Length: 107
Image (tube, rainbow, N blue to C red; front, side, top):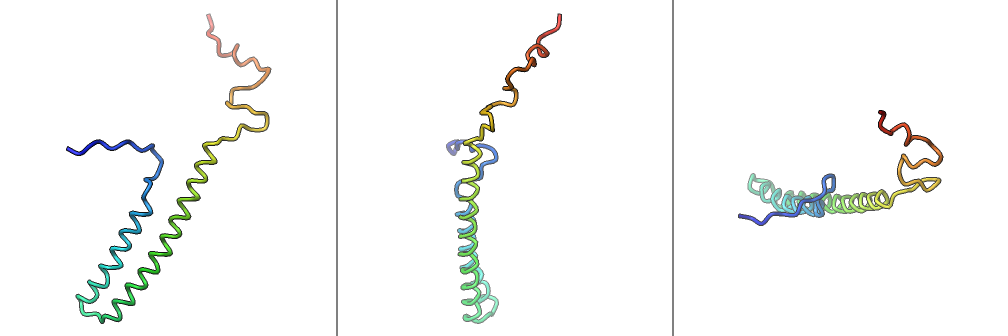
């Protein structure tokens, strides 16, 4: 029986999502030329396909990492929280109102 894994917070992407994508892309960079040669394509054509896939994989990796950094930065900014113009921390923290009397139980 496998050990239970720690639950990730909902809405948070896994830490290595870009790594998983890059691993699958690298696998396809090897698999596609093998299949092309197996079906009768030339070695030069298969090598060209492998180089093209490797270039696309590299660009996608850079874009995925940049996107993850941006998402992490946005999440960090949201966690800091902005208290607003007058420093109120909650929507109901108004000064000088009589809202508490309206919420009191009626006899």
